[in-house]
Image (cartoon, rainbow, N blue to C red; front, side, top):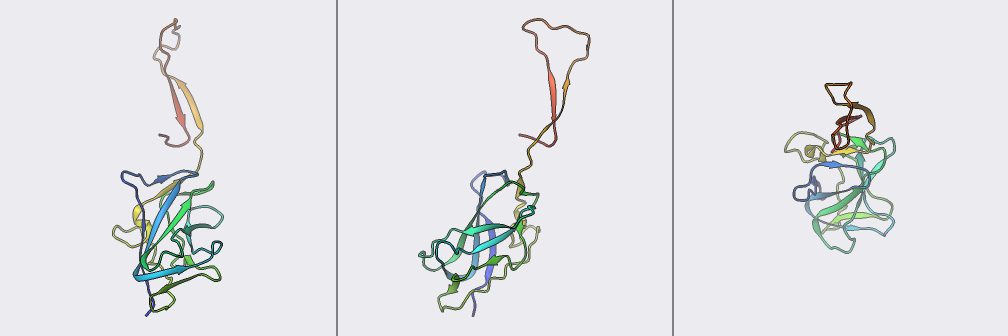
Length: 174
């Protein structure tokens, strides 16, 4: 029988928050129900289409070596680009895992793997990326306003005195 995808997970580093900005790298692990081997040439790696909120298609690329042998997991990596903005990263559809020409994922009996992914879901305990609430934000915060914080608007300040201003941004900043 064909190897089937069991789940896909975010490879969260210890203490890592699920918030990413432009240039950040996100890593994923795709787990099959049995060991598989991926075979490709350098320019034809398996791809996982992501729903990043960007107007152009976005793909995580397989980073598992085609010489790694059989394993029930494949690793994928994605670098956040300008225009990626979503409050809950997931793959686009159940057919989001694609193989370019000349690329295969096979089990030990040389059956081609079934590439259908679990249905995207934000439910806790689901087997899709949506359960991790990964946020991508490439929108640059801008200054919306600057206000002088003082009860006495007629006050004059002398050298060494503190003047307090409140800066408001277009979105939350850290």
